[in-house]
Length: 176
Image 1 (spheres, rainbow, N blue to C red):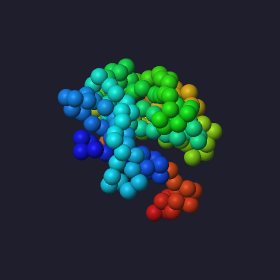
Image 2: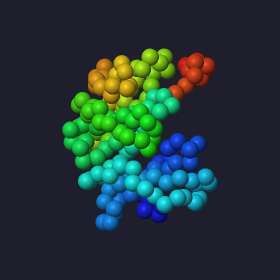
Image 3: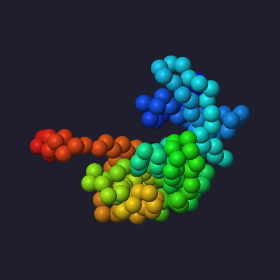
């Protein structure tokens, strides 16, 4: 696992680690390995292989078997891809499409609306001469169709991260 460019731990309770690696032998690959102690690992296996960089993986679990994912790769010139699996993290993935108006974005991040009902959001970081965060919305995460939200200016932010909060946590934050 010493090839890791930057490790990202996903579904830690399963003991699964996914990381980016790139070299002349393997090309640009997201790989995975199992661990019980985060010191020793099984032999890594390919997870996503691209012809150019495969980075910034985002996975959102929709139910016990259904997951949504996006990442930056060579096809991102058409926008960030959205894929779905209905048989688990290491199951089969189908391309739902590309996020509209997401060319030149990186670091996609999905999250579900706290009110439920399938509504969700995606944020991503624009790279280039006018960097910053933009947001997209969807009424049904499982469809993977996102519409860019231009009503909020988030361009002052970079490389986003969103955490869900409970109502009591929200109330405490609001009271500050």
